[in-house]
Length: 319
Image (tube, rainbow, N blue to C red):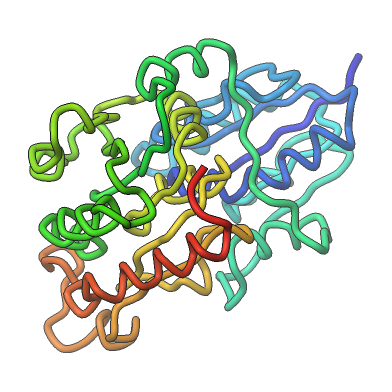
């Protein structure tokens, strides 16, 4: 019987993407192993292309830790070669496993890619990696047809505090696609998850240059579409991490989140952050993350444009 590995990763899309490097390491170094992935519903479609995949177990949160009990019930009958748990739970010690690895303690100052790699003692840390299937590539080709460089934009996020104002994105895109700009006259792909509103940016684009990649639930289709783009700029989000993993030069916009932990990973990535530091934006008197509006207003369009131009110059222009 082939070795079986249980990989328990995040509910959040971005964290799940950032964990994929150590999964790729296991896939490469354990060529006979079969894999079971456990993750939250939002991230589940990320793992459909994992080589030698047995199944993806979706952990839908339940009261009184019911999701953990359901996961245990789904896994207890298997003799695991290894259980790797990035959720800091006690699951690994309740299953029959030859090897157990667990992310322990609260998050420190390291980037999440580095922190995850430490579970297996990997240095340098492996970069995030995702696998697509032919259906994802075919769907992406329909969304982003061939025809010259495409500027990708992610103007939404799962929390209003991290969302740069839409009018700023409209201004930035106009600057980057203006005559003599790096993406002069380029098509613009606007990405947004189901339920997120990117209509103001789409409406501001000429119809013949607008590519809406909105409302697409399959994350690997989104990932494959991002592989077809020449440059990405967007808020700190799971989409940003997908873009970086896809190999697109990626500029992440940061304010009320820590780029030391969550900057897009890789040599073709950069960050533009607000003039106000994280500690000035989060946790002050009267702060309520549930009710706040955008906390990104001290990032100017001029600063974001300068960061984009510097990254484009560093990676050798568009593609």
